[in-house]
Image (cartoon, rainbow, N blue to C red):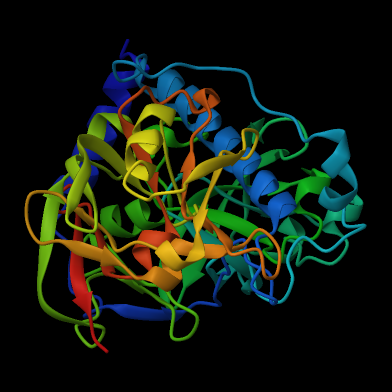
Length: 423
């Protein structure tokens, strides 16, 4: 009998070995934008930041549990910990009594259809997870009230599988439901017999979230559907794409996900690729360096490139070393891991992985004032809670960085790549 890890390895080897036939040079998907935790008046939204970080921390605890279940091991230094709960002081906001966002969306959303005929959903494309779920027509909780719902009876290609699944984001942010396969289409790219969950239970955490569901774009070893492949990996194995890679352009306007290659109209020059550690199931590149001005503050660390994370987070010792280079910096809130600094000293921050230096604009690093006229601003680098379970040398690198570059995720090369955005 094969071990689970063997089955996953064999399945992924087959996936990556398949020779894709030409389906198209690549497919563009326009995405609705996401804001940072910055209000319209230029101040920092503490409650939103705390809720976002709870969601991210619990997402990674779910990833670790799935990785352990699928492969039988975790990378050195990684550790399964308890899920976080939503503080009572924020509970009202999480269930929609107060708006979760001010004016902008909080995910990178695009349209997806499931079933035959297709039922449309607004989906969050997340490189930091591997599962697909949408609300079910059998979900009667308030969190499902204003969302599109999947009706299995209305689809000629739906197939109910054995068991149920809980895609746990922790207490206050989980979804659960049966397991189905069906036809899933994104921008004309069709995956047949795709595993997903039409969730019958969705927690109040998602009630004010503009998304209907989530589509994970990481490796199969993180999937809750053990032994099955996420959507884009299914496209590769079914030979529906010309290349086993996809690219993101993220910004206030013109955001795009490009499936099956890279969109050369969005960047100039060559893409600089960096190999990833596939054993993590994530898009994790090693050997990173961070610079503030002309000073290298951190080097030799791992980076998980995650489109589902608004900011950047790192272990406390690394964050402290970074902010030493910005005079007047200080911890503002230990719970949300936030740091403030004098706004007039907003630094020039950059990352590199042994090649070109990739800068973060001052506007993308500055997340807003503590309050109007305070002169103190929040930086996009936060202290990661030890509940992430990712050890003491791994950073989560999200939108605050990705907005500054064209980012490519390549299964063909097992690498992430960066290129200079066209102005």
